[in-house]
Picture 1: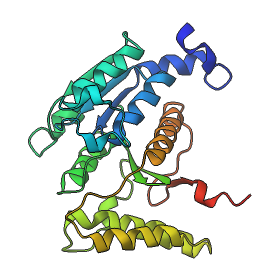
Picture 2 (picture 1 turned 180 degrees about the vertical axis):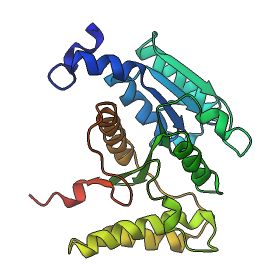
Picture 3 (picture 1 turned 45 degrees about the horizontal axis):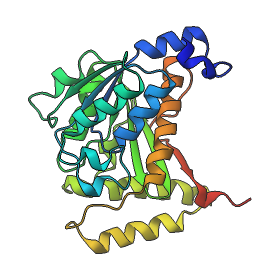
Picture 4 (picture 1 turned 90 degrees about the vertical axis):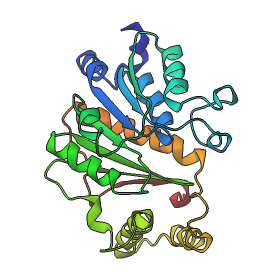
Length: 254
């Protein structure tokens, strides 16, 4: 295990072996592309990448791709990147979008999932339900520019769909999720005014523009998700929805 020799003190040899064989499903490899590399570098060597998109120029500000990848399927480009880091890793790919027909089969055989699917329809929520039926934890990372938020959905636990207003379209979900975050901090007398202002700006832009995302949050989320997965492997405590993990330098007031 020379590759992971510098993980010592933080990760035992026994845990390192378990991490290596822990089967991780990345549903969507936008921000998931950054998470995948951090997972691999710490020792998760059994990873499935699922996405039907190709690499676009507008992805390069925050995702783990280069100009040489433009026009390639994201799965192909990212697999190549990961194998250049560790050729022995077991990197499986599915160059497809997840839908009602393939969702159960794609999820089967994994130990944990990371759900970065776009909220354009009900698929992200169906994905969570299917994972719950198979006893699989699901991590949901959210890129909010200068902050990263991750919430964990567990089998038998509360569903993110509980935040969505009855009859609202799925594309509005992020608005309700951010409201959940800001309401929590308001209740703690720690308001996140800057976050509310960003959400208001997004709403003014309307649905014709894709939400703004930054590489700062992509990097934060990579570390948060990887740390949570290590805790799951060790069967240690993790916060689960409606609680969440939130990190931002905006709150560093030292």
